[in-house]
Image 1: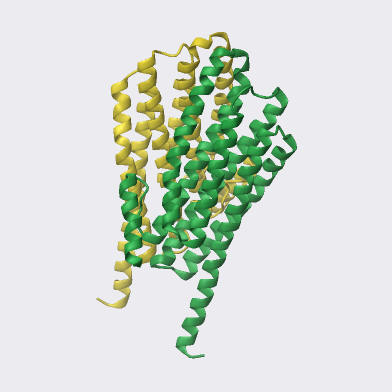
Image 2: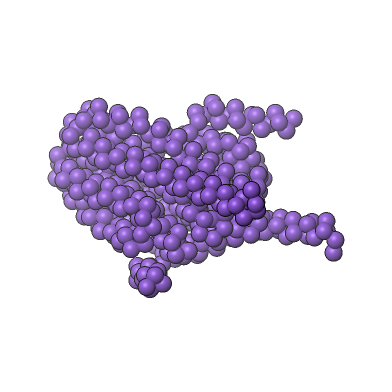
Length: 243
Length: 243
């Protein structure tokens, strides 16, 4: 084997490793997205069996996080990636934290579902849980899609969408606070719904974080603390570069 | 310059860079700890001026995070650290995420302080805010100390302490929910205190995360999802190794 083909061989192996860790992240993401969906359904349908299943699967997600973390460290130590390969590893090792936290929030929602099935239904809030739940599940899905397809435009739309979720979450909280004043006996049950909504809002934040990591991965720019207008310019810059 | 002294020169420069990024992390940590303290005092003393100050300083923390992140990427790309140096960079680049989120939570508490100074004092909850606030501030401080001194025992005690905070937080929530039922007109103001407590509980979680990264840094083991008993064995293992 001459030197060139040896280098090529190593680089192919390296690409395979990068592809593998990326596909493991996406697999973990798929499971996490399912957890969000199941947790919301468990709460709305007062299905404590489904809620317990969500709680049990969380261990599996934690294990996936740990394995992906180890893969990233191994690649950093052995392959010493540079430029866009390094950005890929950094984006993966940060996204995995957000995915694990989304899993935690899904578990918290599942626990609220179990409490609600014990204490009896809340008189309000299910429409909001269903609506915001569907919005953040879609955000998680699209953040992962943007990672899979290196799609900065889709990632930007996820970042932008998070503002809607925050707005609807605040409206829902105000309405539920007013309702509790009218019917104080429902406070404990309504608070369970409020905590579930809070978890959904956090899931939206984590999906936004992942989307921002995708923009960093593609563009090399940390857009987290930029204003929306600046973020858009960053992403449009990518499109111009492509043209 | 012969080859050996050249290597030594590079390695000294590398150590300086590692020391620098670690000291930047600790400086950011010091500011974040102050933010937690100020946010809690702003809420307890209904000091909206102090609350606004906390809110304004958050930008500075975000900038520190960004700079530390860039330092870590630069070191990974140029120095290709291995073994414990690599673990140091990984621990720093993850801890910085937790520090930034602690800063966010301090800002959220400051916003609640502003709302409370507008809407009027809550009738309950200040004792709990002061008490849990002091506990989590100390957790942040000790997590940072354990990082500064590579002290796995201290880090473990922070991890352990988080369970106390979670317990006291749950007790406080139960009491405040009961109080709201007795005095429904106070619901909106009590909810502001509940959100502040929730932020404090999250700050405790982030301090615990940092402490777990210190154990990873020293021991090379990811203890996050281990039971407390297993974590203790891991850290005792370190002590035995030292003996």
